[in-house]
Image 1 (cartoon, rainbow, N blue to C red):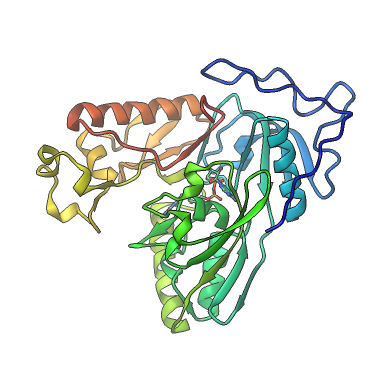
Image 2: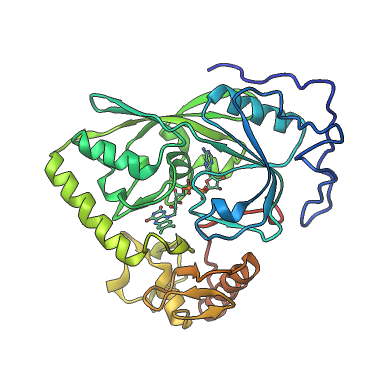
Length: 353
Ligand SMILES: Cc1cc2nc3c(=O)[nH]c(=O)nc-3n(C[C@H](O)[C@H](O)[C@H](O)COP(=O)(O)OP(=O)(O)OC[C@H]3O[C@@H](n4cnc5c(N)ncnc54)[C@H](O)[C@@H]3O)c2cc1C
């Protein structure tokens, strides 16, 4: 655990976020000050890009520009940037592969950070990997090493950091099962926490509740397994997933989280056919089907005719259209069943981000 903060140079003063409730107003252009500098210029190893359209960084292909995009694969540079942004109260957000994001059409008024370190190594059953490694690379790596525990996550796009943040999972398993320790930077220091301290739940972790804690890397522990059998499982799952979510589909997988049967009001629980309940959860798609969500359109946003929880951009769709679709689906389920569905997707550039 080491300190990572650097002092901010005196030469650049930076306007603070100072907005009323609602969409933040940011009285300055984070990309360049009048002198042509940015507060992040002095950090070595940080690659800066001004006014980058975030649609290029999201699987939905939606999202306006970020004032500044800052990328690095060096942990020191990444933490230095985080510390500086926090110290100067400059709005910032961290992106991974952008596969679970709805970004506002107006973009993000601040700095978008990407930590691109992507190493994966193993020693026996212990696997170390950086937050910027692709989850699918990690799955392939462990399967090839004959290590069991991640094979059912094959085909989930995105990076390892976000997979831990959202406790990604599929087919009854989630990444929490193999996580031993996670290292993160909170904008002041680097810390390391155990799996228990990560507070994992279904599509939840402490990192969702403490958004300023940014994952740098993780130590995983898997079991020894039969390489051929693991490969077979992973390949079969990938084939099924590629049919459901063609690799070019502009989507985020499921929009809404599934719901726990035990949390539903009795009057709703009795309406759910037992055959749809899996591991104590009811697919959000079941509720969406009851309100006729399948094959619905909102501008260029479409609900898949074969899956009511799969919403995608057919091309040229906007965040406004996508949000209207999400809100109307939520509202209709609320009216029909009196329950509040919760998004699995994360929002960037909207109020309260
Ligand atoms: C076709 C498709 C299928 C999918 N299927 C599944 C599935 O079966 N199961 C499942 O769980 N998910 C699924 N997803 C959702 C998505 O792939 C996962 O949520 C994935 O983990 C997101 O990774 P990402 O790198 O793209 O994150 P991003 O979309 O870039 O970010 C997601 C969130 O993570 C935060 N974040 C990113 N990096 C870090 C970090 N280092 N530290 C802290 N926070 C961070 C971001 O701020 C953001 O809030 C699917 C998505 C698609 C497009």
